[in-house]
Image (cartoon, rainbow, N blue to C red; front, side, top):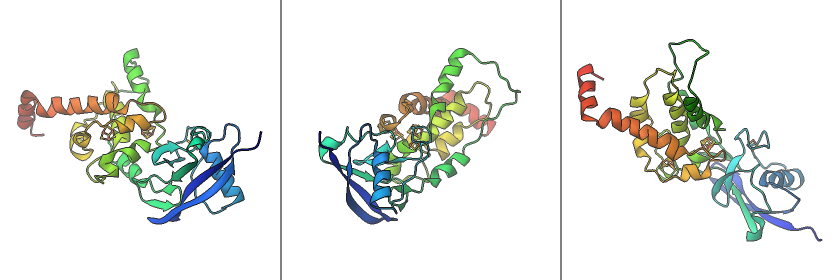
Length: 245
Ligand code: SF4
Ligand code: F3S
Ligand code: FES
């Protein structure tokens, strides 16, 4: 039959200054939004800035907003969205926009550097129980796409970047805290520096995670519980007073 054409409205601009520009592409079998953007870049607008690497949903670098929702450009099929008539593509909005579809996500790397690394007084290889290994498997799936960071209202709407590490880093903290061989103490940081208490469990992060990490239930809530145990249990509170920490 005749080839179907799809309208793509791509945000073009630098910094906060910009607007959507309309392009059209011919829909191809199995085409993902990244294919469409790269086709437009190759044939109509050579200067479109877009970040990508693996094209296989592994590297996490192609995250952007499609119809206002964070998505991996390489994992989102055009045919599933084409019926709406047009597809809007823009950069992640919780971070400063550099150009077109590329945002500056470096704040996330600063947060990452601020988290105390794995520390063990024991020598690898470690002997671990299967249930521990399973609990550690999920947080390790994170591809650092930062889409959970983009969608969380604490960062996106309330701009609490100074006080709140964001869901991705509660996933990271959970892995460290649940690792049976790790003996670093991070609870104070999780409470005071990373601000786990600012999360009010809206679960938007969990909804967008492309690797299916149950961020809220499996990372954030357990960390909240550990903080509550340590800081709001009267006996432990008294112990900390006595120990002076
Ligand atoms: Fe992306 Fe999920 Fe990792 Fe968040 S937890 S950065 S959504 S892979
Ligand atoms: Fe934000 Fe996820 Fe909590 S979206 S408010 S971190 S449950
Ligand atoms: Fe690597 Fe999309 S290009 S996740």
